[in-house]
Image (cartoon, rainbow, N blue to C red; front, side, top):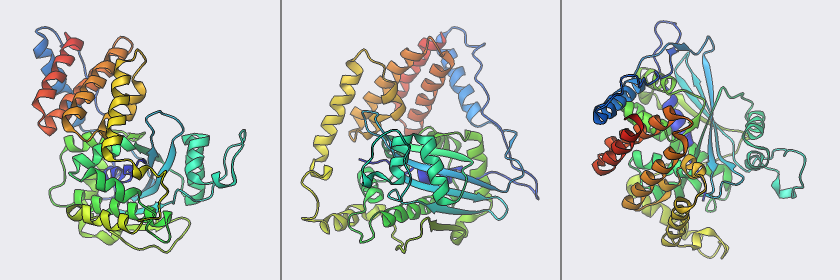
Length: 395
């Protein structure tokens, strides 16, 4: 299964405030001080949580500079649970124009030709840009994407399959159907370019939704931010988001433009979350008898879920590090909420134990962000477990 969605998160990076030709200023979140974290431990826990909330919502002063355009390369990474070669399977360069507050999304189909790094043997069919990331690493893949798009990335943001499911949930979208829509290509005569176009249209629709009306809260943005990997700091994302909202781009949908490199004639299809099952069924029905018997879709959801849960529980029982599972957030692929929440806490707990002696500040930040996420979702039982875990770090 593939990873999609980072694209839409990049649109949350779209805002900040500019005053009469002035520059946009942002600063990193402030550091949490633990000097006052003294017994009683429960008071210390409350203090750390409040400090983290304040840090997330603080103002900043780091400038973008004089350039009026920001290019953010948004990549959906095919993240397998084994942590092997990872393909760039959703590729979108998002250009934010701070002069006229417009957005251009330049999509690159994953099957676009690209050279591969020397040093190994390749098949003739291996030479495409998704493999450039897998065989050459992310930096090599980004360089090939920049050549195809003709645009140099100022920042890179990636999201794996598991994180994408977390993003769908916070957006209140059906996880399975949304993923099927974003990864589907077989029903289209043009195949992969239409899939890439569908992803860009989806990004635009989500951006217009989040940038309109009353917008979203800082905590909502921060949870989304925690689901991506990027060299953009959160305060920059928050500032850009507010600026694009202030520009009223939601009332100017034509100012979010879509293009593709190389160019293909595509159609504009929109995902309908309120009619998702019927929409996906129509795509799947068109493929009856055309898919290989070895295709992954012939495994039931129950079978896939069983295999994944078994893998995760074995990882917890092992003496090996859980850093890969934690970084990939693989528990987010579990559809059963009770099981997913149990595994989220247990992996957080185990990973924190692995890092607390070498990086106590990181351990505290991990647990505090866990608590804030559970607060947002109203999961009181798991919030309390998170507080108890934090207590062991600050007492």
